[in-house]
Image (cartoon, rainbow, N blue to C red; front, top):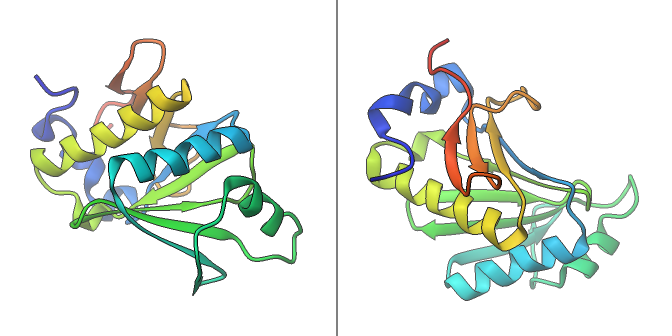
Length: 162
């Protein structure tokens, strides 16, 4: 049985309600956690593209990403990841202390794609040993759902539509 059923959560995936790009975060991270994320993308064989300030470039290590985005005047490193061709995740290294990424809700319809997202959250959370929380666009700190490392599964935090 899946962690989440589409019919129970589909309102959370409505771009008109939650915004097109909900905020996903893993808090309390380090350069090592970022490197584990980069390694996970590689080992899973997910398609990906790295850019700096919107300019495609060769992917670098997490330490190099952190060094490249260290000043307020430098570009934000961005990693676009496609676990499947129809689902895009956009990771941005705003700071080393959290892994922030967006998911385009316009691409997430139905149980199959929800299961892909749940699997990604689970893989990231287990690899890092940290929770992965998704909240409506612009509402950090109020997660709707995510991978809870304490219970080792993706859980619903907010009542859909309420």
